[in-house]
Amino acid sequence: MRRSGRAVAALLALTLPFWLANPYVLHVVIMAGIFGVLALSLNLLLGYTGQLSLGHAAFFGIGAYTSALLTLRLEWSFWVALPAAATAAGLAGWCIGRLALKLRGAYFVLVTISFAGVVSLVSINWMDLTNGPLGLPGVPPPELGPWSLRTKRAYYYLVLAAVAASSLACKRLVGSRIGRAFVALRENESLAESVGVDVTHYLVLAAVVSAGLAGMAGSLYAHYTRFVSPEVFLFTYTVTMVIMVVAGGKGTLAGPLVGAGLFTALPEALRAVTSWQWQMLAYGVLLVLLVFFLPRGIVPALTAVRRRS
Amino acid sequence: MEQLLQHLVNGLVLGGTYALLGIGLTLIFGLMNVVNFAHGEFYTLGAYAAFAALGLAGLDFTLALLGAIAAGALGGALCEVSLLRPLRHESIDTTMLVMIGLWIAMQNGELLVWGGVAKSIPHPFPTAPLVLGPVSLAPLRLFVLVVAAALIAASYLLIQRTKLGRAMRATFQDAETSALMGVPIERIHTATFAFGSALAAAAGALLGPIFLAYPSMGDLASLKAFSVVILGGLGNVPGATLGGLLLGVAEELGAGYVSSGYRDAVGFLIIIVVLVLRPAGIFARAERIG
Image 1 (cartoon, one colour):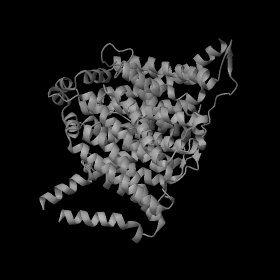
Image 2 (spheres, chains in turn yellow, purple; image 1 turned 60 degrees about the horizontal axis):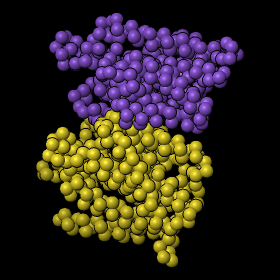
Image 3 (cartoon, one colour; image 1 turned 90 degrees about the vertical axis):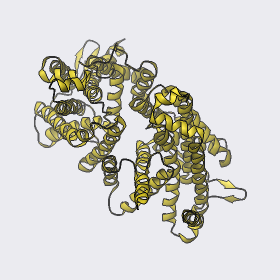
């Protein structure tokens, strides 16, 4: 039953651009995929090690800028720029991990948020490199041999591959010894340490992988919208990621993807009815309601319901 | 040299209001263990309350300030009772998420009510600056500095000399024992949150007329309040006062001598550097309140 369900889902995902002709809907699906990678990356830290990063937009933005600059200024291929973007973001994650590894909870959050603030200010003020608030237009679309992945349909498959690769990577990581160490740290740090889990090592590792994934998402975003500006550092992105992870179910593999799908589609659906401010207002209220009524998220709640029946 | 003095004076004016923000947050964070990301929204609330009183109702500045403080206290008490009280025994991360939600909701609520265009708050002070030797100071800024100092002094008196303040200090040191001694912890929490929010609103009403009132003004205010708290040490009111003044002066000097584009980076860098090197704050010998 579960296997056939998965096969149907995979088939639907693979054929989606053929039966979903509406380019606008396809655009929403692509954005959901990019946010899916972001939510997976945040979930590694928040869901598995229990550390909330409110600086994730910084890793996303660093990835977007790295990829855009490498392809625009140095005319590197997208296929080199993408791993470079992930590496640059991962490196930033390493720095933050090393710096903040002594801190927990609120203090870790504050360091990440401050880091994002500094990076955002740099992107606005370092005119020579980033072109300041005007941003970098004309980021080239990726090319694959003779084809350009300019169309939404082609880009969909690129994003699909990225989502699949990221979830697989997260699944492997979480199921491994490393993932068990993450969870042990989240549940009881001193106990984990006493049985020989190297706290520093694992927290930095989680930060690096998480930041690297966010950087990859940034690169995908840059080459999809073909424009990068300091807006990629907007705190709204971080908040959206947090809501996706918390609503979907932190510490689960499917949760962030469900959350990403839901919270990319929902605002688009609401856009026709309400303005952007109402939508953000609803986000805030929703976050509060989630904490009160569905603290573990949608996916764990559904799993519990299914077990009971 | 003349410039330096001018920067120092401007920094003190800013720093006085940062200290108000910081004292409010250090009490909330220290006493209630709530990472209040909505703190800056009470600052925004204060600025808009001042705008409503001065710009729309045409009241005088003192009334506007009192109105802003009342709005902050009322809003703070409301939030504490409805959102934080039910979650008192939850983890710090849970309440942090709720405060992030409140922050987004309040900010966009303000955006809906007041619109995205920045509002300039009228004030009754003459615009010609007072010139004292090498330093010139707008009368409004002098007023802001004096009022901030008065409010800081009042906060000290409240914390050190009143029964409420003593109960707050006791709760900070040991909530359980205080409860056993008959301190009504729930009411102390409500009072602390209302008091902290009122100070933030006062800061907003004071700085609003110098700058402008706009919905997202609270974001930076929150982060600056956090850097003041971290600079001074959790729950440390004198530390927050000094930290606020220090941050104000550092920002002015940074903007004046390094680059004005990076003015707001000062607060961020303080958070990172202090937390990494000296997490208990630079003035702290031990965590304390009062």
